Image (cartoon, rainbow, N blue to C red; front, side):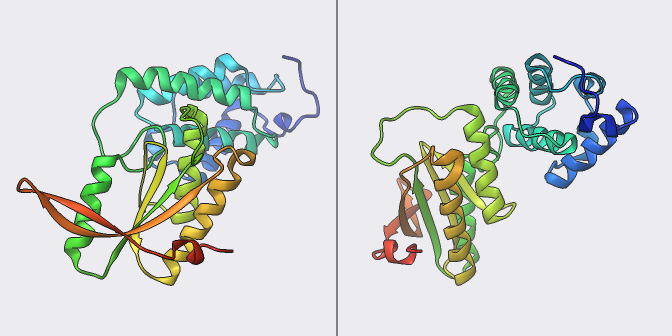
Length: 253
């Protein structure tokens, strides 16, 4: 790494000011809980960036691991790094970002707990998705539609990287809104919503975001839409899906 006289880093008179600016940007980008943002690697990274041009892969990895131990998801790690680079006035370093997500993934493997959110994407887990659909049906507020975006449709089944999964979750949450009933299930993004114009508009935006992510890394994206209903299998409550014809025309641009 080389010293960077005149770089944006010099706009921060001390590493403490850089930390405060970074924290504010991260909270503004969607970091959920103020109290769990400050970790030991944050201070060392801020001190390093006062003299170094770029965030080192080692420092990025230490941050990713620390975030995993603190219970942050991959999407939060990605948003936090985006906030840091925005604070520095730099483009994201994909290699350093990948190091952070890889370190997060390795650490999360040992710290993962059962919960409502998938730590990789920040979206619902499959079981919580099904539970939420059942709750939506029980509310009796009209039909519940499940829209499925099959990623890399008809392509060889290769797993998505941790970084791409985090970006996928960010794209879905950004276009559909926080708290939406959405999950990544076996290469498909499933979204449950009501049948109205606002939901259709958001779904169209979501499809566009998925198709353009990483210059088309998830293409082709195949769309199906089904109406959910309550069902029972061997006495256990569940949901069944009935395919809706004409889905292609609804999603034509």
